[in-house]
Length: 258
Image (cartoon, rainbow, N blue to C red; front, side, top):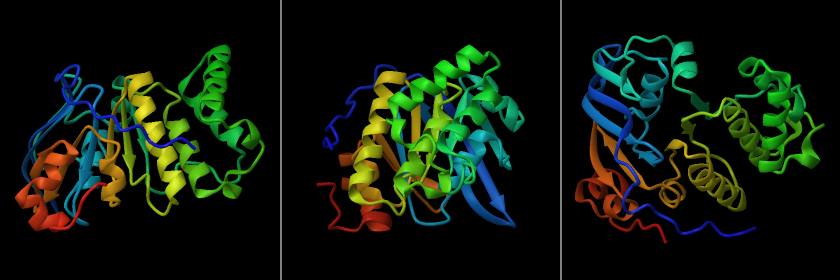
């Protein structure tokens, strides 16, 4: 397997945001999860989100998709105010793709049947459906796995399948919730390569949330560190691990990405 390419975008092709969270505050049962948070996700950017449990990483995904409404603040997607838009309209209007941490596929269906099922939901034309499914089979090298039930796939194969299913509707924004969790080193490198290739070949904006800090930082352009409801650091991987607040509140003094 090829090593992950050491590629970082030093200056984005565009700094035009595709997602903006403006002055967002969120409460769960009177507990404040986000405190006047502001975040921009740029077009064709790979953004990584890091922070301790409970700081709001998954909440940001829920705000973008519409699974959670903010108590205060506004959400803009592709320049359109989307705070009150329903979930289905956000996914279709803005072409969102979500890869959840758990699930995302039907275990008793074969790999090919999972792909076909999702394609039938998103694509009406049969010829176009078949073309898209065949493209994903080739892109993810699924040829030898087509007739295997999803429950019998390895952890890495399942994760690849869920990512492929999320790409059926050609998303502009892909949200990956803990894609590296419980995977071996070679599988993580494979997923890192997939993420980088999606950015370059499909021009997708990608947001990755994971507790595997080193694995995340090795495949993102920019990272944010969340703590106490706020973004305490934002920048390139080297910038955030050098940030004094990030060291104190998340990384510690000895952390590095080499």
